[in-house]
Length: 148
Image 1 (cartoon, helix red, strand yellow):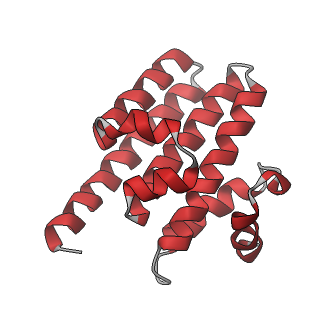
Image 2: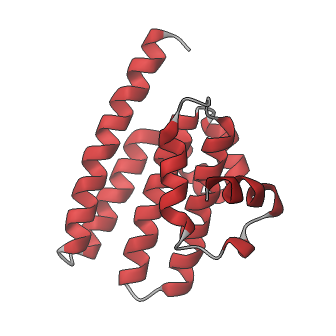
């Protein structure tokens, strides 16, 4: 990876961290409409026109489109925030599906990350206790089990 690409990814991570902090703050304050708007705006800003396609394909397809484990982790983090918003809106089944998708994406990031990159593992570990891992596709179960 070139230095330029690495700088872009680091800027993306910084933007994502700031946006997730803002989204979480809005969510905690109960402003779910604004939290959802900021989430969509952030995703559109980070992923551009690819964003709609990412939402339509499975986790493996999204990971292939994104390529880099850091980008996959960023998308997974946004999916996890979306799940939290859905939960607070009383849309439990949709929240559970989105949380499962976020975990699958984090596991894709783990699979593609170098061994010395703990960020992908942290995201996946944070979701393990919130997801019924028996609902994970078989290809992700061994990865999930290795994180425990």
